[in-house]
Length: 112
Length: 116
Image (tube, rainbow over all chains, first blue to last red; front, side, top):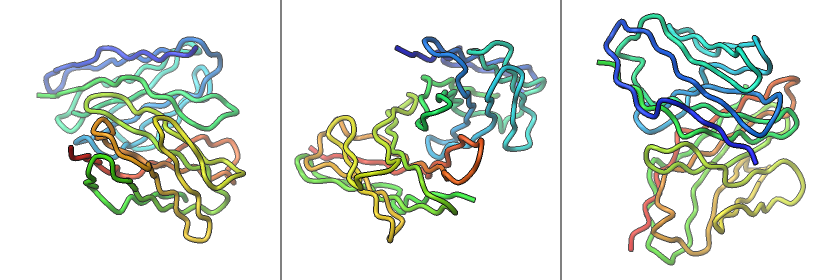
C-alpha cells in the first residue's frame, strides 16, 4: 500500500531564517506531487505541483520554492521566512490516471 | 476556471440525526467531485468521489453524496450522525475538460459538530 510522509511535524523558525520541508511517498511510482498551505484551519491554497522529476509548477507568487530531486521526494524551501509564511503545510500525491489526491499528515510552521 | 462553494461555515446536528453538508461547483466541462474530511492538526482523508455513472456515490464511514448536474451540487450526506463525525469537511472539484491538469480546487470547508 502507498504511504506519504512529511517532516518535521512541527517547526518554529525566526523571521529571515531558511526553510526546508520534506515529503516522500512510498509504494507508488511516477506520482503527481503537490504542496498546499492551509491558513487558520480552513481553505487550502495550492502552492506547487509536480508531474515529474525536476518539473515544478508554481500557482502563486511568493518567497517559497519547491524541488523534486527524486521521483518520490518533494521539498518545499525558502531562503528567508516571513511572518506570513506561518501555516499548516500539506503534501499530497495522486496517480496519473486516477483523480483523488492523498494527503500527508502535515507540518505546522510557526514563524516568529 | 473551476470553483467550489460551501455555503455553510458550520453545521450542527444532533447525534443520530441525518446530516447534510452542502457543496456547489462551477466548471466549464464535466466535473470530477470529491469530499475530504480533516480532523484537528491532521491531513485530509479522502471520503468519496464522483467521476461518472450513478449520481449517488457511497464512500467511507457511511457517508454518501449525490451529484446533481442541473443544480451543480454535490452534497454530502449521512443517515445517522455520530459524535466522531465532528470534523472539518472539504468539497473539491476538477474540470475534466483540461488536458494535462490534475489540480483540484477546494472549498473553504464546513465545520461539522455532532452534539451528543
